[in-house]
Each structure stands twice: as structure tokens, then as C-alpha cells.
Image (cartoon, rainbow, N blue to C red):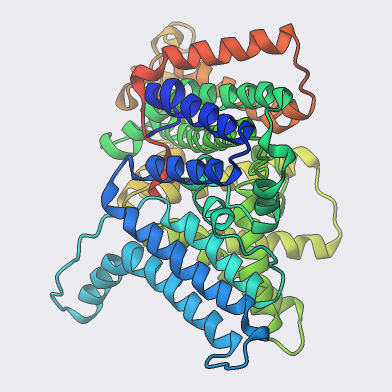
Length: 490
């Protein structure tokens, strides 16, 4: 079930909402929590019910391990140490992720390296496994360190399965979420939260079905269908994907935040205008912020602490490794590894530059950062190395330049320099509106406030009501071209 679908907007969400608060109104709080768990598991199993047992086993196993840690100090018979329990939990979660997400990747590379013929398992990637695994790993580690106080099974299950953030984040932390599920005041309708939630949800819907799905046409055709790309087509392809992935993923996050607010639950911010960043460090503090926080706290910091003495060089090595992990987390492909390595190298260069204390012109810093991100996303999007070469090669080739026909009379002299006039974007199914959409993309990401900033200024009045209705109606009228969210694949 997609957020941008009629069944979610007109059936699942309102029914979940009304029954939840009806049960709370009758002071059936345990029943209301059970209802939220039921609806979340229904939401999860809508795609493929075969993986429902997987998430249930994961939840039960992790809860058992963490609950055993809670009781560790009270137990007289200690068969296992807390460290052993933590190690068992980590091995279980990482093994689950590796088996389903990376086993075929490992087999393929083993066959290439050793010239073997091991058969592939052809495993389908269980929905949301990358997200709910990270959340539970964080819970395990915090339980080991004595930072977790909550022991209610229903609250823990809701924390893992809460449907707005279950499929593609934000990656939530127990200290942010579990107190909210336990709070009595959150059991009562909050009309300001409802109004704000609908406002943010409608923005996210508009971002996804109107903006992201428009850019998706040119990005998909350029990467997957076109055999050759001229200079403008290559740039239009790369920029289209850069805008598509932002509006697609941030649109999903907005809808998740908006839907959660209906239940008086505040999800963490995941985007903060990342394309305004003036450095790679700044970019990762703005893009997929909850993943950055997880990597920083649970991977980067522990690795750094393994050194007896921390130096700049050691910190940069750990930074590079952490970014390679970020890359491989997105999927089983060397293209993702290369993407992570590029951003690791970019972050090291950024840190090294900051050590010189030389100030760079702000526009130049933005220009370098944006183009670095844009080029790295070519690697990220390409299914094969040849696709990346096709797009990036076209972006920097002056041998295949095609300009619009309308410029032929005024710039006819350019024909002497092997510049052609004609279908300048026909290989990506573009038209004369394509350049306009690219300009709109830049305007939206650079000059407008993001949805979180708008949410902080939100006032329930006629102006916001009209804006909400416009976003919502335009989005609903565009649902006939529904596509899957990109981060469902990660």
C-alpha cells in the first residue's frame, strides 16, 4: 500500500485514525495500541504477506534479548553476560540483513573471483528490512549501555512497526518515540496536529506525484532506455534524477511526518534543504539526517574509540570506512560502494580544507558541492558501469551538441562547428518544457523554504487551508501515474 494511493488516503488512514482515537476515548489504551500494531502490520503485509513472519520474528527475538538485558542485574543465575547477549543480537540482525540483501551479491562476486558456478538464491528483498534492522540494532546497543528504560512490549512493537515510518524511515530512535506512545496526552485528539499533519502530508504528496514523478520520466529514459545522449540530454538526465530522488524521498518523509502527526506522534526531521549545502559535510548534515545520525553514533564513534590515540588521519580513515558502509547499506552493488567511497573521499577533502581555515566564496562552495552530489548520484542511479559512463560521458562531451530548432535561425553559424539543431531532448522523451522543469527544480530547492520550516510557521487559517486543498487536490488528480517510492528499493 502506497501513501500516494486512493486506498491509503481514503480508507486505511482515516479508518486507522478514527478507530485509534475512539478506543482511546473509551479509555481502552491497550486496545488502541494493539489496534495500531495491527494496522501497521496490515500496512506492511499489503505488498507481500510472506514476509510478515520475518518482521514478527525479528521483533520477538530483539525484544527477548533486550528484556533479558534489563533483568541481567537482578538475576542470580547468569548464564550469559550482557556482552554475549549483545553480540548474539547483533549477529542475528546483521546476518538477517546480509542473507536477504547481500547473499546473491556475494555469490556473484565469488563466482567471478574463483571462476565457480554457485547457483544464485534469487531472494526477494523483504520490505523495510534495512530500516527496521537499524532501529533494532540501536535499541540493542542502548539497552546494553543501560540507556533504555522502556520495557512495554506493545510500545516496543509500535516503535518498530509504526506504519508512517516503517517502510522508508525516518530511522527513529527509541528515546524519541517510545515516550510519545506512552504519553497520556497523546491519546486525545489534537486539532492543531491534525491540521499541521494534513498540511505537511499534502506537501509531500504534491512533491511525489507532481514533481518527482515528472522528473522520473526523463531520468528513467536517460539511464535505462536511451543508447546515446547528447550534451543537454546527459545533463537533463543527471539533474532529473538528482531532483527526482530528493522530491521522491523527502516527499515520502513529509507524508510520513504528516500521517504520524495525526496520531500526535512527532517523527524526526530527515531533510533540511540539502541542495543548499556548501560542502559535503554540510550536505550529509542535511540529507537523510536520521541515517547520518545513526552512522555517526553507532558506527563512526565506536570505530574511532578502538584507537588508543585519535589523530586526524585515523579519524579520516574511519570516516571513509563509515561512508563505504553508507553506500553498501543502500544496496548490493559495487555502484553503491563507489558512491559511498566518493562521498567518503569528498568528506575527507572537506575536512582537510576546513583545517586550512581558508574561506571559500559561498556561491563557489555551493557550486562545487552541488555538482559533486549531482555527479555522484549518476553513479548511485546507474544499474551498470556502462550506464554511468553513458551519462557522465555525455555530460562532458562537446562532440554531440544539439540545440532546439527555434534557435536555428539566430544561431545558424554554429553549424560550422558541428553543432546540430533539432530534437535536443528526444532521446529522453523530453520536450520544450523539460528545461523549464529543471529551472523550477533549482528554484524550489534553492529559494523556497522546506516543509519543516513551513511547518514551524504553520497557523491554522484560511490561507493554509487553501494551500492544503490545492496541494491535496492536485496530488489526488495525479494519482493515475503512481510509481513506487525510490527508497522502497533500499
